[in-house]
Structures are given as C-alpha cells and as structure tokens.
Length: 125
Image (cartoon, rainbow, N blue to C red; front, side):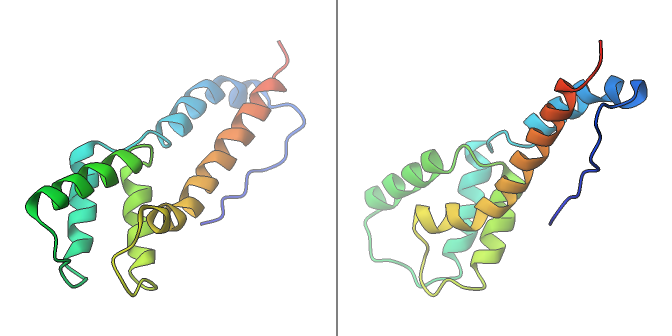
C-alpha cells in the first residue's frame, strides 16, 4: 500500500486551496476506532484460535485491556492488520503482535499526513 506523492516545490493555487481539507482528511484517517469496533475485531479473532481456559472475569479484563491498548488505531487499519496477522499467527496474538501488524497501515498514513503538512508549509501567501 505505497502511495507516491508527487514532489512539488510550491503548490499552485488550486492545490493550495485543497490542502487544508486534505490534511483534515489525513488526520481523520489516523483517528482511533470506537471501543465496540475494537471488541468486534478482537472477538472475531478469538474464533480462529483455541479457547483459553479463563474465567469470565479474566476474559472481560483481557477484553478491556485489549480495547484500551488498541484504541488509538483506526478501525480499518486494525482490521487490515488483523487479517494480515491471521496469516502468520500460530496462537492468539498479544497486543504487541496486533499493533505490529497494524503498523504498516499506520506508517503509510503518517507518511501521507507528513507530506501534506510539508507541502502546506511551501504555500506562498
């Protein structure tokens, strides 16, 4: 998922006019998922792996911890990372393993946002 942005010294007026809304959209693409979406994605993953022998209280606590620790990831990046992870995980993943799989999707978004911000600094007023 490599997005190539053209190199521009200073954007023309048409591009300059679009930059603020493009930056807002790029920032929104980095917004974390709703707790219900995280629980749904993590819950779906649990169906793939053998059930752990934990009490209902432990399962609830784990769910809350996973939800809190993944809350900064956008839903679609988390979903894409989980789908990629399912191809390599042998056991139910840790929070760190889930984040690792989502990171390439997040890195691409941060790269785009950074490029847009850099471009906006080159706008001639």
